[in-house]
Image (cartoon, rainbow, N blue to C red; front, side, top):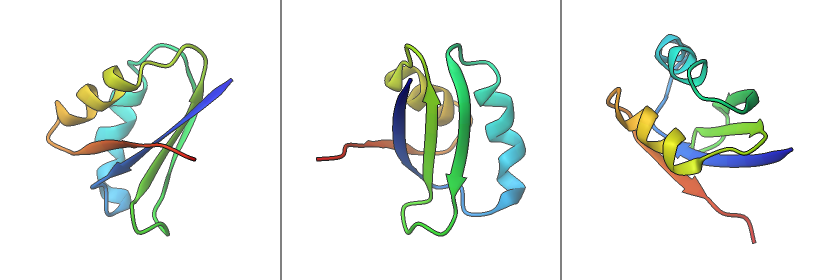
Length: 72
């Protein structure tokens, strides 16, 4: 299983309804969450054969931003 992290602009739990609709349409996602305590409002996605570009475009398609974060 792989893990992808994205910096987002989801700042409250009220916007999670939009994100839930998006995440349910993407193949391969097993689990996801937003870390509201992070300054980056990290979206953490776990799954198999994840397409980072597809996730980013789906989020941007509903008017939010997502920037993939890379770990060193």
